[in-house]
Image: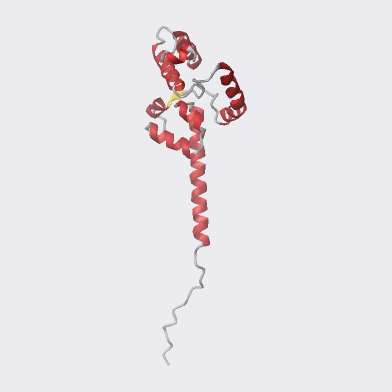
Length: 170
């Protein structure tokens, strides 16, 4: 097993590279601390879900090649390359997030069939989150529409009976 997976901590170089990818301006500023901490959290979250950490290099390459096409399609479909990823806990703390807990966000992602391997990363981009919200709204509308159609179909269509109890006085 490679040393970087057994040591438990990412190297400083890995953290610096991820920080530079997340926010290049902040990483090169006079105070890069927040983006460095965010990068370290992201690396820790991702490393705990690596599906191939116990495989040889050859097996890792085979597994990655097998999933590359599906990942690429889903990655683009869910707008993951658009913007920097944020942890679900950070997303819950943002003022524009509709859901204020990680559990609620995970429930949303499950409802809209957000890929499990991306959910397990514990990170999402703002664009992917907004797409998930849009899909959830569409799903709810479709369910409501189907419920109303079903309700209409099951209504008993009987002619209106008129009250004939009134008799003409002769």
